[in-house]
Amino acid sequence: MNIPFPDLTPAMPEVIMTSAAVLLLMLDLCFKNKALLALAGVITAGAVLYFLPVSMGETFGGMFISDRYSLYFKFIFMVNLILTILISIKYFQKQDEETGEHFSLLLFATSGMMIMASAKDLIVLYLGLELMALSTYVMAGLRRQNIKSNEAALKYFLLGAFSSALLLYGISLLYGMTTTTDIYAIADHINEIGSTHAFTAAMVLIISAFAFKIAAVPFHMWAPDVYEGAPSPVTAFMSVGPKAAGFAVMGRVLFVAFSEVQADWTAILIGISIATMAAGNILALVQTNIKRMLAYSSVAHAGYALIGIIAGTDEGLNAMMAYMMIYAFMNIGAFAIVILMNKGKEISDYEGLSKERPVAALLMLIFMFSLTGIPPTAGFIGKFNIFLAAVEAGYAWLVIIAVIFSAMSAYYYLRVVRNMYMREAKAPVIITRSLTLDFALLITAVMVVLIGILPSIIVR
Amino acid sequence: MVPLSWYICLSAVIFGIGGIGFLVRRNVLIMLMSVELMLNSVNISLIAFSHYLQDLKGQVLVFFVITVAAAEAAIGLAILVALARNKSVLHTDEITEMKG
Image 1 (spheres, each protein chain N blue to C red):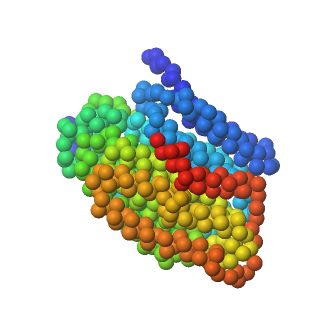
Image 2: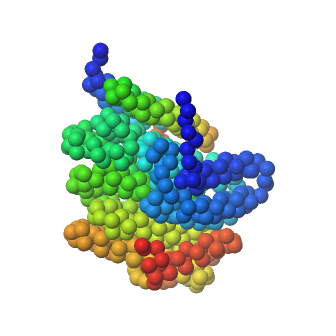
Image 3: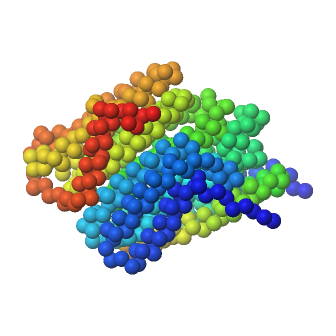
């Protein structure tokens, strides 16, 4: 039997990313200074960005596709990767738990996400998802001596394994009914099987597994504990990356494979979206720990982004993708400030920051305004596009609910701002600056403001 | 020959046992075993479908599932060992450093 060697051009970014991850694992043994590994990680991301535009097409027997859709998500993953590397270097040095595996795992998780975005077959989708998930479980537990980190990893692992079992059962049912695992071929068979109970079960199982990845209700319970326990740069990474990857596969599977039964999944997603916005925003109100607050806020943002998918139009999908890009900048920016502070776990730790560190306070103000969705920041543009697409698709009532919850979110975001500007510091605020962290803050702040003023640079 | 529906029922029952075991039991090791049970029930249904449809894709997926399940078990136990070194508990009700 002669099996032709597959054309690697469309998968070049993934090939580079995975090889670099393996290489980094070995370089970790040779170099004492882990900043070199970080540099190698950034160079890899640069190489991938260079190869992305030329990597169009299908390969591996039609199991892997690189198109404009996957391309956009890969840009988000690269932004996420570069910013996370920049904010992690000093963090791990400061904790005196410098681990080189961190950078290698970041690259492995990112290649998993890239494979997910490019999956044209449910087998590839599953493998990409597991590569991403297994790497993030380890990253969450990277601070081995810290019991909170252990606990976060365990909780994330148990619930993640459970959700991947749900996904697999859904895939197996779908395979039994359609005789194929190809996402595009499934679409042709949906009409034949109609709306049987088994098909509904498969759809619900698959949507549940995706809902876990994007931290949507009722699969959001892991988010606050894992976000709090995991090292802060890892939290920043996994609040953006796996969420964007989850949305990428959700968009592809629902819009392509299940396009014929749009009414069914729209009904499910509307319920999930409203519950997600409600739970995220209401529970965030009572949080005192800033990482838990940002965790619930990330749950709420998943709810907003879901509206883009519910709209069911290309505009809605584009708005969701742009939202993920904007979310990457503003959320990692907020986490960069949390990492900047020596003592910044509680929201009360930010009292009086504006007097002692006016620049840090101003940046946090920008990120908090953006997360709330106040113009002229990027967060406003993201929400505006999603709501506009939903109104055009006839979901004005859903947009009204979303706007009410969004107004509610101002309370907990602006509480941080009030603490920074209107309260006196109880203890002197100490921050640890570093060149890379400053650079990450510069990029995120500039992008948040720039997208807010010139939205055309990311919205296509 | 055993009809396909028997295999599907078997797989659904095992998946159910695994799912309920995961949600009800509070011992981390038992929860891990329940997840393995769920994954293996998927393997049963995939192989049954693959055989009856005369299509190899299902069996290919089973190989991947077995491989990933092994990796998952390794990582899960490693996390558990790291936790047990700091605090020797296996009961999830006692792993409550964080509320939630």
